[in-house]
Length: 290
Ligand SMILES: Cc1cc2nc3c(=O)[nH]c(=O)nc-3n(C[C@H](O)[C@H](O)[C@H](O)COP(=O)(O)OP(=O)(O)OC[C@H]3O[C@@H](n4cnc5c(N)ncnc54)[C@H](O)[C@@H]3O)c2cc1C
Image 1 (spheres, rainbow, N blue to C red):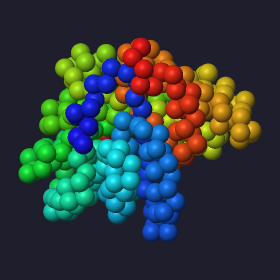
Image 2: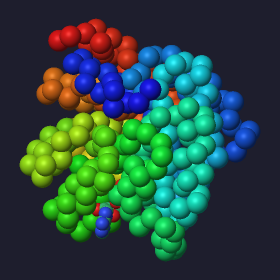
Image 3: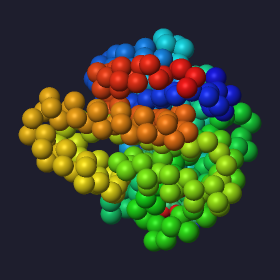
């Protein structure tokens, strides 16, 4: 099912992101985790594409398995960094053949020490290509409440985001953030710039001290004092850190929903227990017309 047909829900919905394995060996355990997460009935599941610039041969297959086994719609990520038009066309053909209707169209990170070659300079070009193809995909794209790390200027970042949306994007998902005020400010700025598509805030439950550094390096997100205190206090106690991180993410979700945002995307890091704990924490809110 195309996600654009189910975006206005009028109640809280969660969607979940998983990442595929790097090798065949890991496939069955990732699939099992993904299916367990899908059993929580999210609005959709997204599957990342070779984060870090490497392609992924498992993304589309994992999407297909999730859709067939759980009937939850999937969103297949696709990056265009260092890709030719022919390679992208083959990916679109494969997605169509596998019955996947939704694509998260990304440029991808440029690998360290590399230069970006290929036929698509920016995600905008990939979106335009998908839109002009013979297939009718629903297209999502990424956005950055704290601006993209390569951007020097917020105005330019939003101007390029508008171009990306105008190229044919149906919705946006945000980079993780740990202070909801940053998201509200960003939404105000992009609405003012004429960007009207739905925006899914991306929430990352931080469940270990080790995860903090990696998440902040990847996202360049601001770490609020409240969050820093939590890591300082619980970081050396794994079970307490996990519980506190889930509570923090839940608090963000409840605040977003109470502020009028219905569809929230959760970066699960392939952890069914974390996704389930969040669902449990909002069980009386999920799906209710409040
Ligand atoms: C929700 C989400 C999901 C992600 N999933 C993945 C994944 O599965 N796999 C993966 O490898 N990475 C993933 N990423 C990371 C993403 O690939 C990187 O952040 C990447 O560096 C930028 O991708 P983009 O699609 O946002 O690029 P773009 O939209 O192309 O933007 C990249 C930079 O170029 C600038 N720019 C855009 N258009 C122009 C223009 N016309 N002229 C000049 N500058 C311009 C932008 O302002 C920005 O600074 C994800 C990120 C998010 C937020």
